[in-house]
Length: 150
Image 1 (cartoon, rainbow, N blue to C red):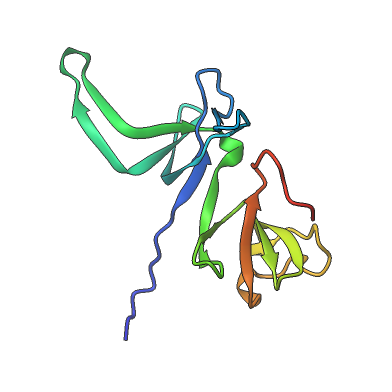
Image 2: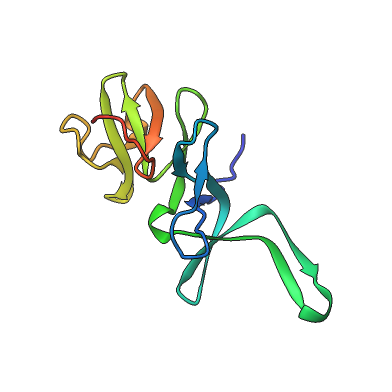
């Protein structure tokens, strides 16, 4: 029997560009969308938020000193923690995800009441624990350019 009660705490956030805005990328059809999420540990330094990726390295950069690779600034409003639970497609669920619950209700994952719950935009899911639902499917995030109808 496994008695290890620890879990990995993971975060994600969207990269910022040189102006501090959420970085954008252009798709082949010329649609502009938010950049992909960066995953790893959350670090706050001098009022800025960074994600330290799993492949981060400290590199001796010669006369300029030390450089840390995989230390990426992200927009604070896009940072969300993994809830340590997966949807029906085996995708990790994070704060800020929009989930389809029981193929019927769409709601946002938030932290509240001492755990991860739906935020209540849909009365049927209001303030219920995520793990109480039998079927969950991530259909987007609150940070997507286009959001599904709730």
